[in-house]
Amino acid sequence: MTHRLPLSALDGRDPLGFLAALGLLRLLATHTTADVRLSFDDTTGQATLHGPYHTCRHVADDLAAIAATMTDDTVIPGLPAAFPLPKTGTKGSDPMRVARDDYPTLHDAVTELGDDAVQWLSCLITDLGHDDRGRVALTPYSAPAGQQTVRSFFGASAAHIRARPEHLLDALTAWRRITGFTGEYLDHRVLHSTADHPRGEPGSERGVPGATWLAIMALPLLRLAGDGTTATATLWRRLPNRRRIMLWPLWRQPLNLAAITTLIEHPDLAPTSDGNHITMPGEKAKALGVFAVAAAQRRPIEGRKSAGVLVPIPVNLTA
Image (cartoon, rainbow, N blue to C red; front, side, top):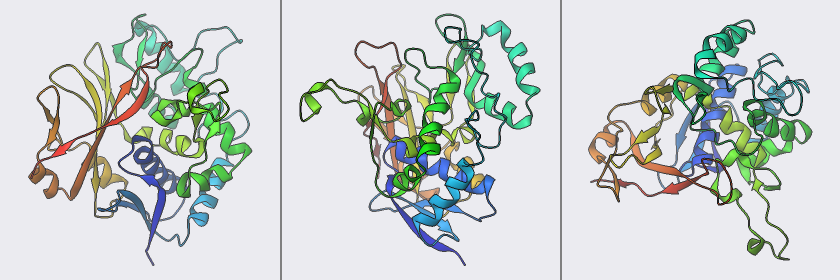
């Protein structure tokens, strides 16, 4: 029997909430036998899981069981510990961020780790773009800062949920922020300055490990591509003023993974912009069961070399 389970903490209008809902569905659909679907409440934007689960605790228990399959050296469920490739030594360069011409060699090395590793590689890195150092381009869902590597992009949240599986229930019901966790900059509220602290202590990021881990687990659904210079991915759009945004739909009807992939890549969900306002044709969206469209863009972080945090921006759905 199918039950309708609201996920109160996963607001589909928020980039982290939406990505976490996608990652949740993908994990349950690929790592359990549950027949699950996802929809959003057309009043609150809240994610709703349709399937055999009666409570969020039951969902969190299955997620914890999936996470428990990872050894201490593993950062992605179902993949060998050697992926993403680790650095050799503490000061070495990231072996996943190779020069563009060296991508075939990297691909060959990952192929030896199995088909699942190759699938993950294809959604993380592409030689259809490059950075300012001539290296292969990363997915726009990643905004590395400091010494972060592709492996540590996964490792930080994986370590938190292995140590405290209750973070997974928190991700579904009530977000608990952890000081010193960056949240991989998928959430602008992670930034806290001295002025935000009640005692004026130095500011530090405060992210949500469970929601971040779920969001990262959605990446295989978000196809990575590029134009030869810049990488792009499913949901990312370039506006006429060269501004890059992430834009996604919210839908009423319960959809499985295949249907969601078709919807989020649908050509009728292309926005227009006059340079100041972003607009989506309402009739085309309605025909697809979409009742709202949300968007976000990267906002640079002062004093840091990073693409910045994802900040929600308004979208006008025309009548």
